[in-house]
Image (cartoon, rainbow, N blue to C red):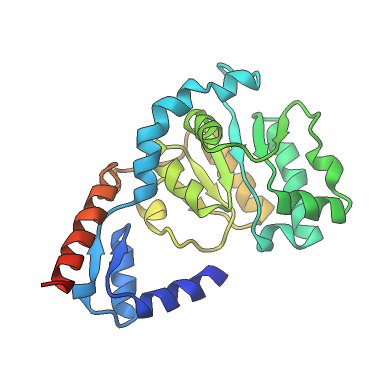
Length: 242
């Protein structure tokens, strides 16, 4: 992933590296980072999720979309590997329509995806007047979390949604061939399905049939990561001035 280049450069120049999951410790050691510079503190994004979840649920987004009492899925799609090739994007959008006939799907359409669809003559597939594939503009954080917290399944190429869905124990079909959040595969609810329609369809079938493993608690994703970050930074700053 392009972002990994910047991450590697940041690793090399940082004096203190705070990581969100155990694999991060291992990866940094493989990069040659001394273990004394690494701290496992947990995931600060999950702090926000857990603190804001009651507010998000109070938004009742599913009800506002007419989905009260119905299982539904949530979709996000924006990565170049999924939206830059007309054949791939077209196949994915047609598949989403197929899946939406089995379960309503809420698709928050990223501007990049909307622009690609328009350029490729696929805009009609993400029109806003459809009943089962409910296409929306990107939603504010609380509204998006409201939808995610009540979803039966997530289909996404977003790293953040992989993490959030794992904490919320929502099955996540990750539309990528790799992930920088491996703990969501080993302990969470994520499965890599790429952009192959057969793999996506098979995984969706597993969700509908209840054949999806429950997620397990992820160490230190407990809503207290921010406090651990502050403590580590305070200790580090203190050492610099000792």
